[in-house]
Image (cartoon, rainbow, N blue to C red):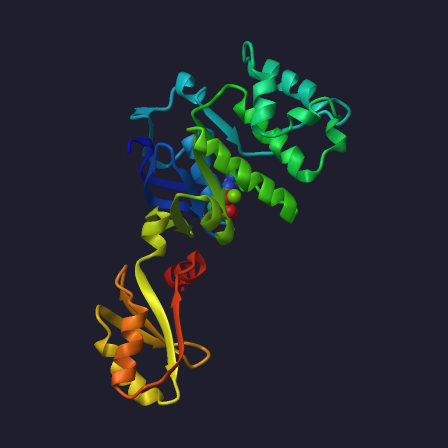
Length: 297
Ligand code: ADP
Ligand code: MG
């Protein structure tokens, strides 16, 4: 997989504030890359530096293996702030005006409206749109120049659940059509549902980066319990590929085993052979939230 953005040892100070600390990230072509972290962790700063809007204190960013040029910039559509629309004009006219302002010759306005699923409503006034539709129109402005990469900062901020869902589906469909998408978000759930890759920032430090499956499925977990708790505790160590166990809040035993090795029937048999009748046996998958809490606490 080739790399669209190669971010190398990026550091940013705003006066005394250390916003980014030696962060290196590779953003693969064709990915939906989630830049995840609590408010103030440096996400917007990072996006600003990528787009040459913010000047890094040190470090470099390569776009398709070269420093970002004016030509390269045309291949990137960004939504870092909400664009201004004319409330009394239609979606179509608003896009026409934006295309003129951006200097885009022969914009495919109909095609862009179709991509964001607003074609049927193209002649409706902006002021009649729902929040989700307004945000889709904002994304449409980024699509006007047919960019190969799109950069969104908190794209679902301020939307209701319906709007959030519309934007998620739109982002997935854009990626399916070959665009690389970089999005900053402080919402774990959002990144987990949409992104193929993730980098987690905390106070300007990179905690982890990689494919979402790689990050989420480090180990498999099985939750077990039986009335003979002590005997079960001894037995779990005999489970094939056992790594460790923990006691959960509700008193169950969470057993970690090597990824892809869980055999629930085998575990049941092993326990039964040792005189244990399980009253709980369930396979768990790690949520990004657990990983995030584990990393940041
Ligand atoms: P995020 O987008 O993850 O919420 P930001 O990149 O906006 O984080 O901010 C990272 C840190 O840098 C924060 O401590 C923030 O207050 C600070 N910061 C951001 N922009 C500026 C600025 N223009 N001047 C001074 N400090 C800033
Ligand atoms: Mg931000």
